[in-house]
Image 1 (cartoon, helix red, strand yellow):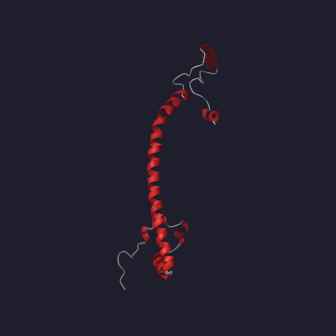
Image 2 (cartoon, rainbow, N blue to C red):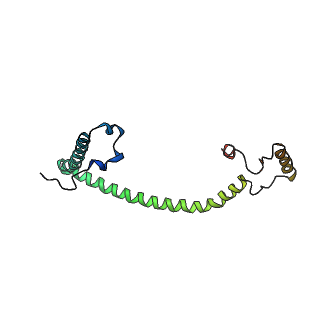
Image 3 (spheres, helix red, strand yellow):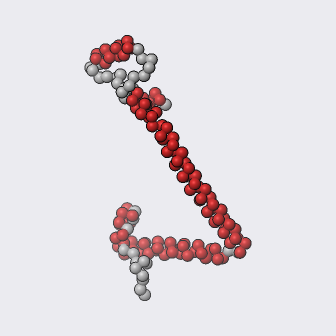
Length: 147
């Protein structure tokens, strides 16, 4: 009995797909495991058609209508994902200037209004006393304070 090339399976194709416990199996056992899995999958795939054929015409009609409804749902969902992607892109453009400004503030690139020069000079003196490590450049633990 000759098998088509589609039905033949080389155990070496599995490689890392087999679980670690399968490494303890002999090549013959692994081949048997693969063939058993293939047979089971083929039975399941073939069983799908058998199940539909065994249904009454009334129930088969329900299944057909349900498939049509699912198809409509899938179309709506695809449109939803398209619109959502467009909306996310729109708001990403709006967020960009805010993210840039926030980055500059957090990293001390720009100063915010309301900070007096006297407070800045006092902090610089404290930084010098602390060994030259500047805490005024960045906001320490910014995400702890932000939450």
